[in-house]
Structures are given as structure tokens and as C-alpha cells.
Length: 414
Image 1 (spheres, rainbow, N blue to C red):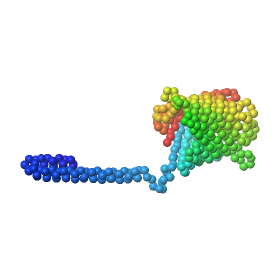
Image 2 (cartoon, one colour; image 1 turned 30 degrees about the horizontal axis):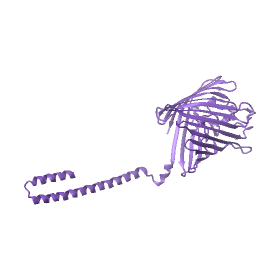
Image 3 (cartoon, rainbow, N blue to C red; image 1 turned 90 degrees about the vertical axis):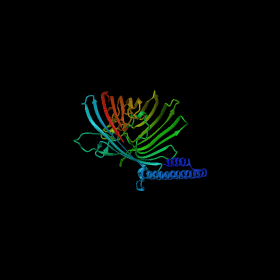
């Protein structure tokens, strides 16, 4: 608009200038220059005012969007997450009728920052009880049956984590996720749902650009009794991870897990021994388990892959059934919608190689004294939705009778 005004003034001057005197023309030119300068000053002042107004609006918007009242500041340090798994399962065990069932697993967790170095976490999960007041330590499944009965919810996690700055340490206390490293996520010794209780330490240290040292350890309360010796577990594990020039990795290590006061005690879960040797309803072995493990991660073209193995031996076992081993691999990785992952492993687990109460609850129906294959396929259907198929093709017990198990899952997360 300012430019149009200047143009009209110039045009008027030209028209009038045809019959004007020279001194009058000069005076008009001088006035035009003064007017132009004044217009430029006004235009510059207007831009400054607009910038100030825009700045004030931005500050108001930021305050409205980003700021929380003091009474809700705690919410910035809290994270809530959860998942729901719906599973169809078919079990075909030789000598028994086939079993078909539908199951759910629901979990709701909350973590919060107490200080910059301390975190606490809680998680609730479904679980079927193995007694009137105790939930199964190695399963969070609930079978859909019993005439639409309400399903049980149990405390699955209740822990603190202290991570001193620049120390490489994580110190846990309470009921926690398993702190021990499991190559390929295998469940040869520990079921994936097991959440041990006690104190644990994780430590990592870089040894240059290509190597990383790690160590994990802990002491856990397994069973406390008022009139006798308590049952406990001490474990320590260490290893080294090396990164090659092509970005493939090689991880190797060893662990030792010692149970106290198991020999001569009654079953830890219900009335069964989950494949372990027993007599007169008592364990007949101690369990001090030595483990060695290795894992190689690499790429096939652009597809991530890995191969892994684990070997265990129960050193004080009185019989020959004291070893177990597992080998397996993975191809692909679920991340973005349309991605997928295939996994496979084979294991041979003798009766007293590990404590059956805490071993994989799906392999051979839970516990020890079996061998077989596990095949799994997972597909990322959407950002927070996966579909999965898992098949166990196993031989179970001293007679090596057949045990097949199919699981079809839908997993929803938030």
C-alpha cells in the first residue's frame, strides 16, 4: 500500500511538472524525498512491532502447550505402559487327549524417576495360582474358562534401580526382571516370565572402540521358612562383546548359579518336581549350575541375523542326568509394520541339569527331562500390534513320548 502511494505521488508530480517552474519542481522533488524517507521509517517501525507481537504470541503458545502446573510436575517423570496377548493353544501329548484352549496375558506397568539416578517400577499381571495365595512364578497366562469367572491379578514387579552417574552400574532391589544375560533370549535355565526377588547388580565397561565387558550378579530369596534353613540363590555371570569392522558382533561368557538348601526340601511349586529327581516328596540333589554361552550377530544382506548356543551342567548332581544344551538362531527383526522375525532352537535338557521349577513352562509342558525343536515366526502387523506362531516338537520323559504344542498369538501394546 505504501509503494502504491509513492507511485501516485510521482505520477502527480510528473503531470504538474509539465507547466511548473524549475524552482517549484525542485521544491517538489525535495518534499518527495522527505516523504519517501518518512514512509521508509514508518515501514521499518511497523515490521518491528509485528516481530514483537509474533514473539509474544509464541511465548503464550509455548506456555499454554508445554508448561504444567506445579501440582502435576511429577507426571513428567512417570511412564505408563502395558500389553495384552490373546493366545490360541493346542497341545498334543502322546497317550493323552488333545487339548485346545484360549488364554490371555495382561500386564500394566508404571516406572518413575525418584531422582536423576534412581528409578522405581511396579507392574501388575494376570496369573493362575498354584496354591490359594501364590501365583505361578513362571507364567502370566490365564485360561478362559470356569464359567466367565473373574481372573486373578498379581504383583509381577516391584523394584528400585540405582544407576550412579558415569559408573556403568545398575543396582536393583525388590522383585525385578531377570538380570542375567540369555543368548537369543533362550529359556534353557530361566523361563522368560520369571521375576526373581532380592538384590542384583549389572555392570558394563567399554574396553576401547570394539570391546565391551559385562558382569551380572545377585542374591535372591527363593523360600523363607520360620523353623528351618531358608532356600536361596546366588548367581554371577560375566562376558565380553566384540564388534568387528563389518559391524557383526561376537559375545561369549560364563555363569554360575548356586542354590542353597534345596537337597531334602519339599517342592517349590505345588506338589510337583517338574522333572527333577526326588524321593519321598523331597529333592534328592543340590543345584549348582555352571553355564557357558556364545552368540554371533551378523547380517545376511540387509537382514539382521544371529546364531547362539548355551551349555549347562549341574556340578553336584548325584546321577548322570546333569547336563543340558541349546543351539538356535534368528533371522529378521520386528520393528516397523511389515517387518518379521523367524527363530529356531533345539535343546536337550536332562532331568537334573537345571532346577525345573524355574525353567521354560512351554517346552515339554514345563520342567526338565526332554528334548526337541521350537520354531517361531512373528510379523509386525502395525506399530503396536504383532501376530506370532510358535510350534514345539518335543520328546518328553524317560520313555521319549511325543509332545507337540502350537501357539497362535496376537499381542497389543501401548
